[in-house]
Length: 169
Image (cartoon, rainbow, N blue to C red):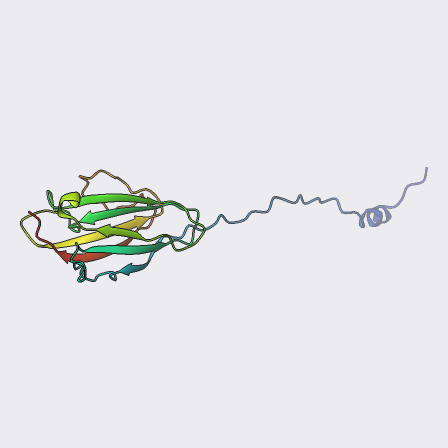
């Protein structure tokens, strides 16, 4: 029986590759969660709310929120006389949920101020309205909470604040 010398045997197998690298799954980053923004407001953010000069009606605000994630619901808290929280004065007046829409800018939300409906505190005339919006539910919807604009941990909130004068009985 004839044997091949070791160098000849090794050179014969040099052309073969014994290493097989498996192809793994392709991973893609999940879509980013962008926080909502206050696209515009009438009157503008920070402006004083005044009664309608033509109709003499109560003051109010209209906001247009936007969210790059068009599949997100938007949760909105309307808060009277906050910040800071003052027991018996601060009031979580209304909660709104905007459904997902197929566009970045959402349908407008209007908040007309009303002494009775919003339980605006009596005894002083200078007040503030805050709108706080998040793309996740807020930490709490309890009307008596001390931080009604606090989002769930790890999420962002956009705020708008409007001072107004109103003498509520």
